Image 1 (spheres, rainbow, N blue to C red):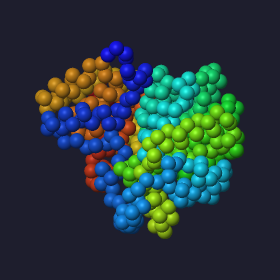
Image 2 (image 1 turned 120 degrees about the vertical axis):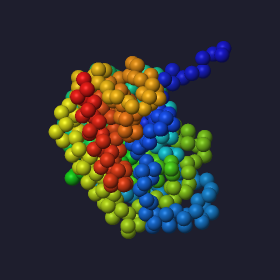
Image 3 (image 1 turned 60 degrees about the horizontal axis):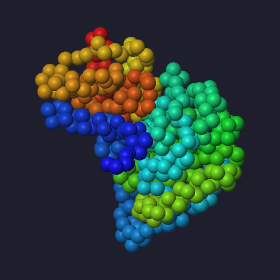
Image 4 (image 1 turned 90 degrees about the vertical axis):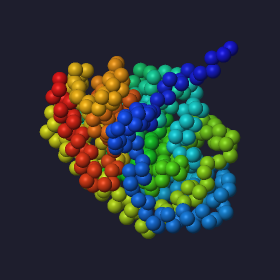
Length: 434
């Protein structure tokens, strides 16, 4: 073409969680039954939507209003309802005007970074959730800036690393948190979040917290929302969604809660640009927005959350126990979300490790992928070829640590145990092959 039309950040748009599906599909076509542990879709893994929730949505479908446009910023009744819930927690106070709906948080993330000045960088956790890290990298045209999560400290953020990187890099305009965290399942206590707020205040940075899994939290401390700790000085945003907690991932319904927007003219103008962008597409999906006040205020909703959290707590405990005593493997028991990260300390995995793949066609295909592959990706490919269990390499989460992420979503109890026993046994053989 007469001009190069490719964005400078195009190569940063990597989403291994989905991309590994193509490899798994090819292996499936060669005769291996696949167990999909790559993506956090509770419905795909067999979770049944509770009847009372279906009744609410069914009634809304019968209302003509749910078929039309809603306000650009989101349904006013729903926004006011959500603002009241924020205010009831204590902490910073907001109104319905501080809430913006999007077609899922993927849409919100694209807008957040797409309308941010290119030179302004947001530092995020490593391991990182791919949607966030890729969007930040793509908007800047450079690699995503990260701070370390420390497996030896339960995947807590390295606060000294955060402050040093902000102190010596004035292009950093904000800090990104994911709480509860994806992919590690860590839940940040109030004290850790308060320390990060202090760093933002000291260096005049915005604080963004992805709270997708805010109510998928089975830690002893429970959910701590950004609104409860941010105070009245730091500008910030919480990213919320119904996809994981109802669960309704196919609704593509997420929203931003904006805090202290009038504290800084630059931040206020930036938030206005997000609303201006929303006006160009008229509005986000109506039906899911209308369901939120009805479902959140239903008498069965809190018991529903408690039941699910207890289910995931037990699964996290069981899954972690399968790796107890396995030398060379480090697993921190998750406290939120529905993922478990299997970590291999530096030097444990190497390219000499391998296992025999008896299916000749699968062996030929996988061997072609092993050339130049990182150590943890090699293990993931062997797991896929030998067991059919499809997990995601940890290095694909903007991270230099070896490992993989697996979900806690399998509803069939017998198969759940099979997944983690098979992972343990196969990993043990792989580590012993060197």
